[in-house]
Length: 372
Image (cartoon, rainbow, N blue to C red; front, side, top):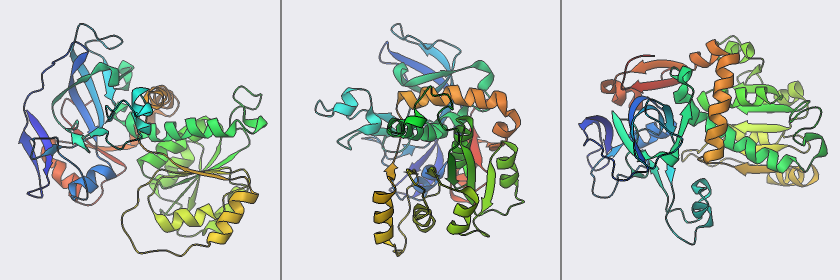
């Protein structure tokens, strides 16, 4: 069957003839892959910055943002049935008995770093016609989510971040879940970046009651700016507004959701984080020149303003479940805007160009089945 793979030793990206998968356990399911999203991680692997093939393989099948349809299930599978739409999780436990995170099924917090990730590290990914995996790593979507379900995995980044935000913000009595004003009523959030992770994060924040501002390099009259405004957010162009001007427009910045990987702007915005503010890093920067930081000011503000900064990577089952529920709700509330995030479906033969050429739209997708 066809698969899009990188061969690190040959520095090649190609469609290979990949072996058909077979179920070897009664807990596994066979899934026909429908769509696979292309993201920055895939592009970095395609430029051979990292990416590790499975043991014994010269190549790594790419793709970790998947949507598939279940073809066959083992006798011990529960909660997943033939014909279901599913999204399959990315990371697998390290298998060590001394890793309390993986033993608890939370390999997204793995202590050892010996985990494997489909399409990234040690396991073939989803950019192929069919896959087999343990059904416990699969999350079922409603049937009407066929056209946008591939967005679940990138949305899990925001979901995991917000789960952790509320674990922290419960220290503030007015943000307690179930309070009269709701989780985020009266709070201001800034999203850094207007890529798919940023825009999906903006929907997650808006739906929770944050007054949400997206800060990105596009012009104020750009398509992305209009998209943000159409879902009830505000767009602030970084071309025309420095961080101080942004803070003046927003007021007290209660939360920053960074989704750019751009170091300088990210730390500049950290300098205007508000009182009791939370700053979430999700981007992984490339190796670039050093930047200057006003470290004294940052440290002083964090202490005197009760600020918190944390990073988040990968996602656990709770974040995947939340992403399925939220994306379904987003699709009901903003169907045109959610569909617009997917800016092209492409044949696997075009994948190499998507991975190495100029970026195309918001979320390009490689499709292995009929168009929705």
